Length: 237
Image (cartoon, rainbow, N blue to C red):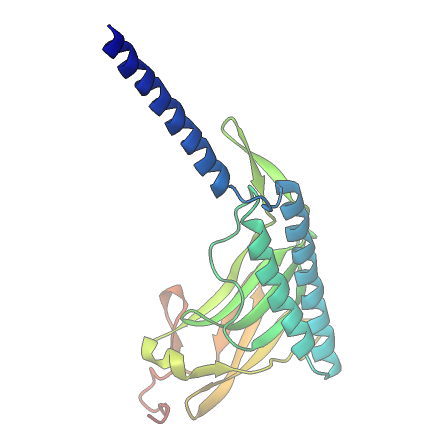
């Protein structure tokens, strides 16, 4: 009888120690400086506003013929800050990387027929040339079934042009673009593919943006074959 009591007491003691150890372990894994949702949302919104402001500053500098590098740095930093803070909130951003690789070819804003304003960036990305756009609007909540889902303003790719064959991508580069007429939603983006150069026109057709290169063929899903014409000169190896 005495032996049974000792065994029972040991079991209870081990159980208590195990629970205590688990509680301590959980506490040690919880960051004491983790931002609250409210603080993270505030920081993410501030970064988003800085992103929009950076797009406006970039456009103003480009149209004035002045240096765009400070505005480009602001856009990149604010986008990075947004991604850093948004992960600590219930909001889910587009999982695509929306910032160009290398130099921003163009940035600014445009207005849709519904009156909404969108910021945009144009530059090299993924498999060719990309235009990403971000709606300037209040953050909201949408109803999905019985749940209220926190929702960010619309953002993603507005236009794309994909190089074919894909081995041309590393030789493809773009430089600062131009907007010939402020009254038109039309841009010209200079490019090079190795030692071959030209310009790609980006224009709005209805409510859609489309890339129109100056050479080759554009097929389904915007796959661009710049040297599809046999007479076209391919870049030097």
